[in-house]
Length: 128
Image (cartoon, rainbow, N blue to C red; front, side, top):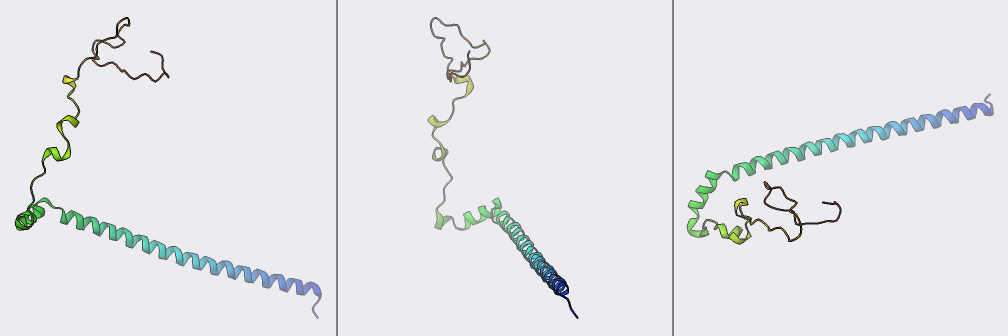
């Protein structure tokens, strides 16, 4: 004959078995999901490698030159002029052409003789 305590023990054992089964089932599902995601990542990496190889093949200079010659009449391509990228006035001046600033009256030059350009920006954070 079963006592009330035995029913409690049976219930606890059933609950523990159910929880254990649920945890194992969830773990198996998660492992399958991880394997699926790893396979997707590998496929994406392989696709990226393939696209990089295609780009390298398609942008070979000698291939592009052949295409330019083949379709020259249709495309009417011309070389890029340097002024299309930047005008001469937009380019920085060579260092040997940079004018030397004259020192202000009443102040001593803070620059060394070897430094032809004085830092004219004052931020106020550093005493000079």
